[in-house]
Length: 155
Image 1: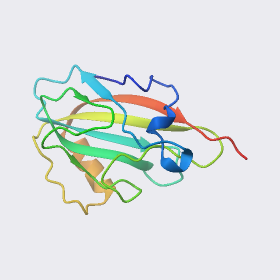
Image 2: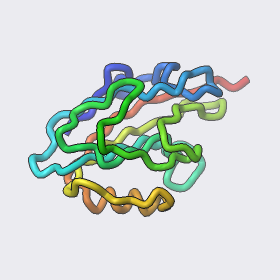
Image 3: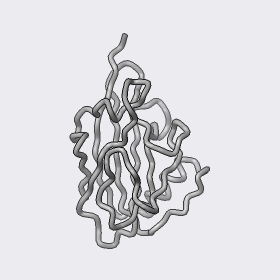
C-alpha cells in the first residue's frame, strides 16, 4: 500500500495551514490518498502520531476509523466519508489538531493508514488510545505511512 499527500511531501515540512492555531496555523486537515490496498480490505483506520513528543505512545493528532473500504482519499479540510468516525486526540477533541511542538528540534508526524479486515471497529469513544491502537493492529492487513516534519525555533 502507498499513502501520499498533495500538501505534505514524504519527509518534508508540513505547511503552516495544517498546523495548530497556537503556531499560527489553521488546523486544516491535509489531503491524503492511498493505493494498493489488499482485496480483503473491509475498512481503513488512520492515525497521525508525533513519536517525538515526551509521552508514552507519542502524541495523537488525529485518529479516524471505519473509513469505508471503497474510499481512496480524504480531502484537505474534510469532510470525512459517510460512516467514518474520529477518536479523541491527545488535545481531547474528536478532530484533526495540527502540529505545534515546543520550540526546539523539528518533530516528526507519522500518518499511518491501516487496511482492516472488519467493516467497523465498534470502538467506545472513551477507550484509552492504547487499547484502540491494539485493536487496529489486531485487525490490520497492511499499512502505509507518510511522515512530515514541523518545528519551531527556540526564542
